Image (cartoon, rainbow, N blue to C red; front, side, top):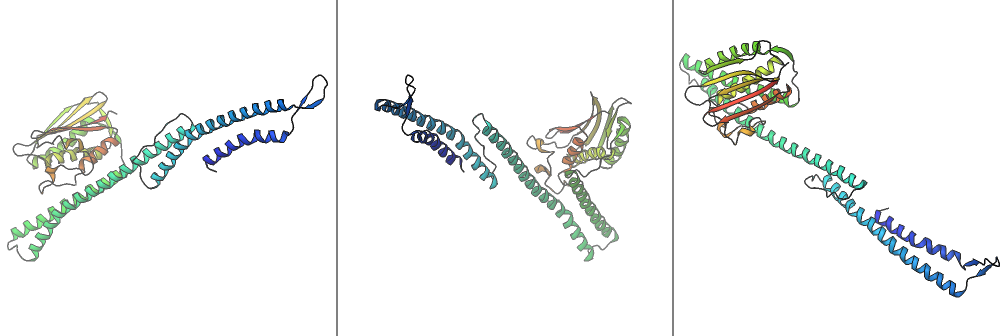
Length: 359
């Protein structure tokens, strides 16, 4: 039975029960205290009794009406809001607010329902953003794969058609094909790593490592790579010999290499420089990687760690990559319990810092 019907029935019961009692009583009697006998009420007494009963009955009607109207008015609108909200959620519409009013058990139900709606709304928004991000990612991957594939196809056709009339030219074509294939392989490896990170599929191997020893070895490797690129590399070690942190060696090396590779991509003309500095900052080890590249605009800077984000400057044939290298970096640092941030100035370069707790 609906709430409205229940209240109507309750209203009728409140009215009918007193009336039924009166009718069942029939002729009313009174006990004479003197003679101790039952006598019939006089007509005047009956009239007075019925007048009193009528007045009480009228008061009862008004009181019942007020109470039931008050109960109905305080419950039904909120029940209606709850019903409408449930229907909208069933239809997949989460972008609304439930009007919560009152201070009773039904208010608690409405509050819980609003929390559920808000959670569903956030979940749907996150899913939508993830889908849009996947679309951008696929678009980026398709764009970056198209260029080397086109080159491989062109040079392979040149070899097939006998364009290379000298051994030197043929070797040049073959090397270009190999380099483009390596470029595609690197891109696909990044995509594979990205998918593992997205599903927490990377098995971390944490161990206590000497900060100085770790970065001394890593800087030697980086220096050799950058010198081959014609980039000046500067390394500053500002930690005590006993400082250590708990890290996955391979993944932190990946972080440093990804940041430096990103710096290499966005180097400007003229003298090129990348520096790696390590500091102690309270309970943290701070790693700072600075370059003198083209920098990042203020519009792009807040989004550089977002998955598949790349600024407009990167959408050209000179700058390669999937665009989610820095999102991989951020994920690895966060799973080490650290944090990462960047500062940059267009035309002057970029500095990226990440903090890791000491062991």
